[in-house]
Length: 142
Image (tube, rainbow, N blue to C red; front, side):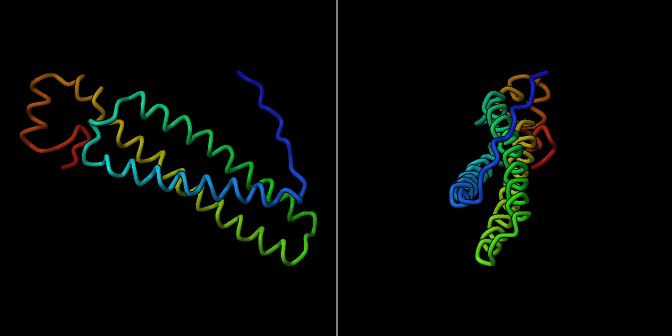
């Protein structure tokens, strides 16, 4: 089991950097969610390796979401100015959106995995034929 790397907590002067990191991650994740959503009716265009990468990247990102939340909490404990409190509130809300988007990507990836090309190729001819005739995916969706 690998040891956890200690977190390098940032001074409140680094709020713009952390805010930018959260905003960029949120935009990228929302874009990635849209791209994955396009594959919902065609999961066979993906392979298990692609889904593995999506799950790995977004599981790591979820760890950062937790760290961002802790960092925001540490800054709140410093009794910042009203302007900084408003910025921390905005960052906190955006970090929650990042958490929700990241969870949505992970949930969608888990669903898409059921119909990847690797899964299709692993079906017997009979099973594949039945799914084709019924117009269903392996998960039973039409």
